[in-house]
Amino acid sequence: MRCEVQTKPELRQLAALIENMGVAMLTTLDAEGALVSRPMSPLEFDAHGALWFFTDLRSSKVEHLRIVNVSFADAERSTYVSLSGRGEIHAERGRVRALWTPLARPWFPDGPDSTDLALLKFLPDSADYWDAPDSKMVRLFALAASLLGGAPVGLGEHGHVEDLSAPATVLPPA
Image: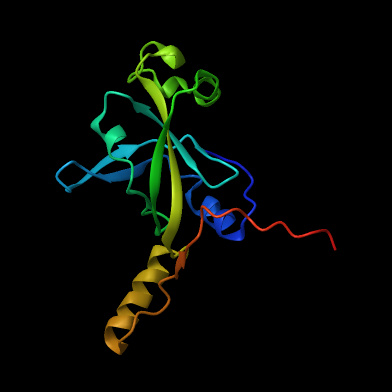
C-alpha cells in the first residue's frame, strides 16, 4: 500500500502501523443489520487520511457504506489497528488508472477500464490500535509475569484517536 505524507500526527502514527499490511478486513452492516466482513487489499492511505480500495460495483457492500470498520492485523509484529468511519464510491477513471495494479486483474480482467470497477474511499473517524513491537519471547515472559501478578505488563501500547476526518490545523511558520 502506498502511504502519502500525513499532516496530522495521529495519521502519521496510523500510517506507520499499517503501511506494510497488504490485507484489511472491511466490515459493513447488511440490510438486516448483521455484520459482514470481507478481506480487501488497500491501495493507498492518502494525505487526508482516507484509505482507497478497488471494489466491484455489483457487490452488495456498495449499498452499505454508512457505517464501516476496517481492521488490520500483523501477528508477526503484534500490531493491530481498527478504524471506524464511512465509505464512498468513486468511479473516475483517472483515479482508477492511477491506483491500478496488475494484481487486481483476476477480479477485473478488463483492467482499469472494467465497467464494474470503482474505488471505495474509506474515511476514518476514529481508530484503536495495539502495538507490541518487542520480540515474541519478551511478550511471552511479560504475559506470564502478568498472569502471576495481576494487570498485564510489557504488552505494548494501546491507543485511541478520534476526529481523524477533521482537517489538520496548519500552524503559521515561527
